Amino acid sequence: MDQESPLFRTFRTWLVEQGAYIHPSIYFASGSGSFGNAVYTKDTLDGGNTKLVSCPFSLIITSKTAREALGRFVGSSEESPLNDNETLCTYLMLHICLSGIKDRSLATESLVHGPYVAILPREILTPIFFSEQEFELLRGTNLYLSTLERKEGWRQSWKRCQTWINLPEDVFTLDLFMLAQTWISSRAFPSSLMDDSPSLSSSNSVQILVPLVDSLNHARGAPVSWSVDDSGPQQKHKSKSLSIVSHYAAEKNKELFNNYGAKPNDELMLGYGFTLANNPEDGLSLKLPGGERRYRISRKAGSGVRGSEEEAVWNEIGRRLQEGFAMDTDDLDVMMVELEMEIGQVLPEMISDLRSRLPTIVDPTMRQLEAVRPQVQSMIYHYAQGQYDILDDLMAFARRRLKVAMEKAEQLGIDITLESGEEEEEEEDR
Image (cartoon, rainbow, N blue to C red; front, side, top):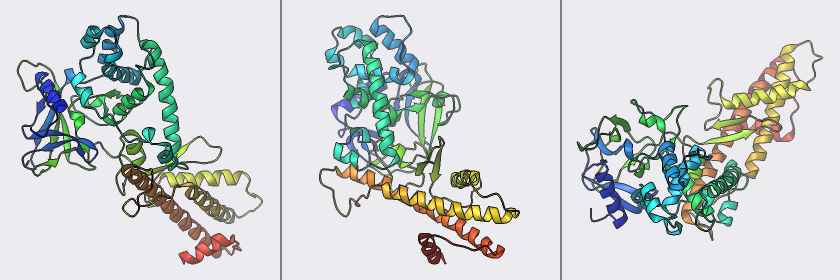
C-alpha cells in the first residue's frame, strides 16, 4: 500500500479496527481517479462475485446516531430542532471545527468519525463552488436556477444550525457548511440499503453515510450488487455489514467502480461535481407559462411511448388553446385538426425560445476558455449539449405531429396557411 497517503493509511487502520472489510488487493489513491479520490486494485481481479468492501452498520452515519452524538456534544436532552439533513451536516462539520471548540475532550468523545471526515475532499466542483465567471456560463439553464435555490436554502439551513450549536460564525462557517452539504449530496445513500434485501430506491428512505463503501466512484452500468452480511469479518464485531460485490473483471492498477444508478447530468453536476458525455439519462425540466407542473423531457422525445411527458406537454397546450378556440363548427374532425396545427406552431416557438437561452459552450478539446477551469468547462459542455439534444428531439417530435395534422387537413380539404417559418420547416421535412 505504498501508494496510499498518510490520511488514507490512518483511514484504513481505523476501518479494520472497527470491523470493516477491505479486499486485500484494494488501495486508496488521492485525487488520481476519474472524479478525485479513488479506489484501485493492485492485482488483477477476475469477473466473478468479488466482495470489494464491507462496512459494519455500527460505522454507518444515520440521522439517529448523529442526533445522539450532537445531544452529547451540546449536553442537552431536549429534542433537536434540526431536520435529518441538517443533523448529518452539523455532525460532519464539527469534526473540522475542532480547533475552534474549547472542550476538545467532549468533542472527541462525541465525534467518532474523524478518520473518515479527514479523507473527504476539500474541493468539489459543483456549481455551488464555481467562480462568478464559470457560474455565469450556466445562465439560461434549469441548473442555473436550481443552484441559486440550493445555495439560498443551504444559507438559511446553516444559520439555523449555527444558532443551535452555538459556535461563532468564523468557526462554524458558511463555506464549510456548504462543503459538508456537498459531501452529503455526493456520498449519501438511501437507508433502504440497510434492509435485509438492500435497494437503491425506496419511498421511505432517508440519507445515510457509509464510510468506505462511498469511496468508490461512479461508472454508469457498472455490474455491482449490494449485500447485507449478518456479522463483520472479525468474530469480536457482532454487527451487520453492508457490502459491495463486483461482477466484472479489473486489470492490475485500474480503478474500481460503484454504480450510483441512472442519473442525468444536471443531477450529477449539482450533487456530485462531474458529468458524463452523451449521458442517456439526461432530461430537461419544462414549465409552461402560468402553470405549476414541471414536465421532465427525456432524450429521444416522441419515440412512440404512450403517456410520455412530451405528449403531456402537447395535450396541455391543446387544452389551453381549446379554451379560446372557435367552437362554432359542426365538424369535430375539422376543429381537432385545426387545433393540432395550432399546437404544432405554438410548441416550436416555445422550443426555439428555450434553445436561444442556452449557453454556447466551446468543446474544451477544441479551445479552452480563459478564467474557466478545464473540468468546469467540460462539465458545462456535456450538460449544455444534452439540453440542446433534448430540445432538438422535442422539436422533431413537434414537427412530426404538425406534419400529421397537415396531412389530415389536406384530406379534409382545409385551407392550410402557416407562418413563413413553419412553411420553410415543412418544406425541409418533405
